[in-house]
Length: 290
Image (tube, rainbow, N blue to C red):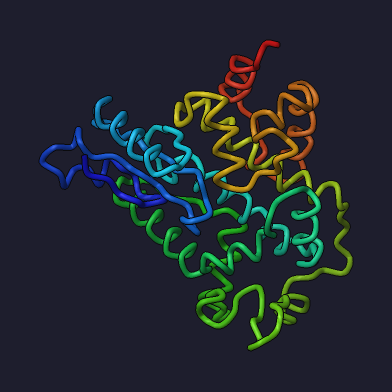
């Protein structure tokens, strides 16, 4: 088989360059590869069962933990993790102080704050993905509507010349021989002293946004099992271990209570928190029975 390590580009499109598209598969490793056990295997539209099975065996032979997802932009892990970092950026744009966002994330059990993650992966990469998504949809006659977080990251790169850690600094400064620190200009640029916020709301937005996107992936068939959703969220994107995984976070809270809180967040913070009928159905359909 022939595999791509892309974390975003649809495998079905890449397979068009192959004379044997049925042998083309996605094998998405996570960085740092020596420490991250999860590997996301992506089945393209034409990928054969044999190719998926061989990729699965290959990943296990490497001592890694495979999950299998169906092809779509961002697959499961990159798509869902993107909601985490962009929700953090969106809150910064609303006027919530950067230290509050970062600390709330870690208090919730995330290993790294969303702004720090954006810096590490490079803000320029996020903007490149945004530009590519716009171009791809435009080519098919569609218009992409960026989220508030994506627009803020784009402003950081294109207007404020803050490309991320590798480029000298992004949301953080990196003085030589010292610990990183939040860029002081974030405060005058983005904070709004009169903007009211609650710490629990900040925590909930970061976790609920990921859980809802996970449920959407299940509803759309990107994910095919709650098991892969939970394993992928904990070992791939660092969703808090105390939850049992992104779907178990929903079930542990109780579906009715989760949906009620999601509806509250949707009314106040936009469509990222909307749980549509198909997603509600998927949540209920896959609910474990003990």
